[in-house]
Image (cartoon, rainbow, N blue to C red; front, side, top):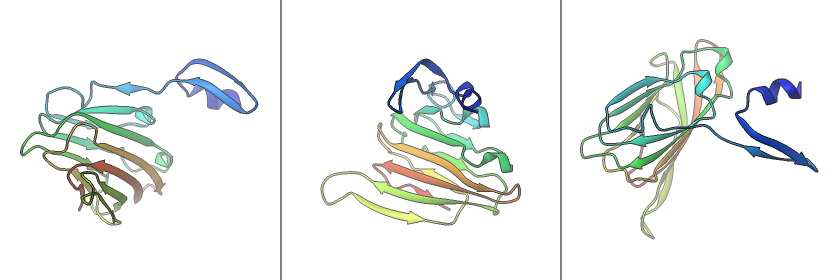
Length: 165
């Protein structure tokens, strides 16, 4: 069983003692959303665990995988290396319009007294708006998918408030 689990990891050197394992390297993808082009991509299960860099020079659209019971546990992370330009956004779209929902924790970062946190528990499109600065991040995880409906958690940290609709 452990061999099966370990075969799915991108491992540089794997060693451990006393219950501690080290040497794990995470995949970082700077090609799908990290260039100064407008990108529309549909993620797959093979992309799970990847940290994607995002260049916000133009609009980016991230489509999450089609409805499937095998989606539970898929996770993706996004970090902005270039701020979203004026009038440009990055949207994350759940499959099956109107049948899937984000459970989102939306963190607004900023100067003292400006930072806040809010929640959104309905909607299938998460939008990171224009003027989000480099360093913003989004973490998405599928927590339920019965092949007809899905639920994904979303945790955002950004300088402009993200929205779920």
